Length: 342
Length: 297
Image 1 (tube, rainbow over the protein chains, first blue to last red):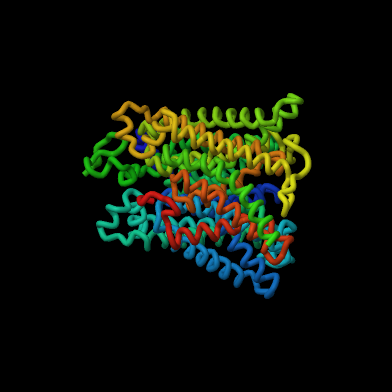
Image 2: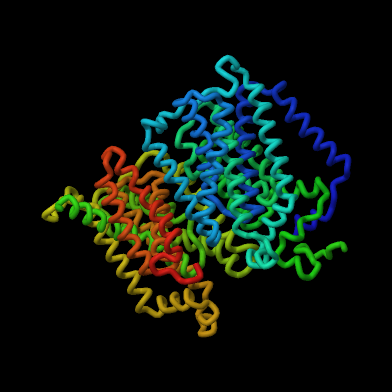
């Protein structure tokens, strides 16, 4: 652990930092020029996973709530919009709003039920909720079409076949969501959430309304999952209950953890890189996921900050957040043993 | 009435097996303070172990195969415990509560995909214990399920005997009640952790081997029993051994009655696990400590 934290103390030269930012932005904006339809599709799906991984990182890494039901809210968002379109013929725009609200509402109900208790109860309840939602979607096939899949109208209508507009839409959704999450993490709310995560009793004694902020974090991330779900649904145009099997949840968690669960950007990059490598390693079939499963466990055991987060910290030149370390607060010493500058 | 009795007996028969799986989970939680999110995957591996033992060694005793599968599950659990959980109990890992949730979930993701890669997605079914069905007067029950249930009862009984009567079991109880006091009287709690984890997942693997002839094994066969066990341990009270046994039997009966009286029979079986979520929510609303939970929950 000490090795990359010592690296954190160093800063990347400014020209490397801005150079990389410029290159990343250029690659992201110009990708449709040199990617063919197939790989463009892969990248669009990668952005969807990046949104899931980063919003899960906000919930788990910042707010300290370990939910295994993130994909349930994705499905709630997607199916709400899909079912509204199928039965009431609503346009996608209304479906998107309804889907996000429905995900938030379901998140609120679960949060009210579970968040009074220890973190383990949330993990237990959400895993059960997610599995049972899947069973219900599968079982109520007359309404949801079950395993056959629910057809969802394309966002831009049937006439537009090109994937390019969808690419920019998904990129836009991801970037705007990331900016919103960054604002949230660096606001007072983010500070409260981190305080609660480190020590609920202490935060409560300092006047933070613990349950209220925990619920807020859960509802917001549920809505972000719902947002990912509606755009995914209106892009791939078909939904099936298999989208919320537990191995999919495992994959999202692997992306966030391998990237770095305490950094939203690292989690998002983890999502993009892993999704693209899954496609690239297609020849290895199921063994790809075995490898990522092993990597997930090894990252948890030996590199809790993830594999990308330390690199990003070096690039951004920011000091590691001393407040994240339990032993840091009292003595003016960070976990890496260096004295905090006054 | 006859219909009700037949549902009740089916529920009881399944409930005993559920209790066995949940007992393993409870044992792990009460000693290590870890919820094993990979419990269902050990159940799954037990099923595969028994399948490969019985199909490669023809004529091998199926009951010995169950024990052997449980033992293999236990050894695999021991390996995981030593590599990933012991460092946590030695204080080498930050935020252990979060770590234990994520690392066992990670293990479940790893094992499930490993099973998919090695065994493939198609169902495997080991040979039956006994063919046919047995009449209980008011209903007929498949001989395999009845055998599984009676064997589960024996395993349950012997595990309880070990916990209550042997020196080893008393040491486990001591660690579960008070780690520091146990250390004072010379009990090595790290060793008890390994022991409890191995026994706990070994029981899940044995249950998987017991039910494999009835339900076949596929890589994701563990999801349902693991979700069900989570409901059972919350209903019984986290860490309570008698709670998990009673909870298992209650859930078995509720599932059976629920499936029997659900208006639409085509969906009734699929919705078995749904009742569990309703019970989970009710427990959280009405009595969060469960039936026999400790206060701190």
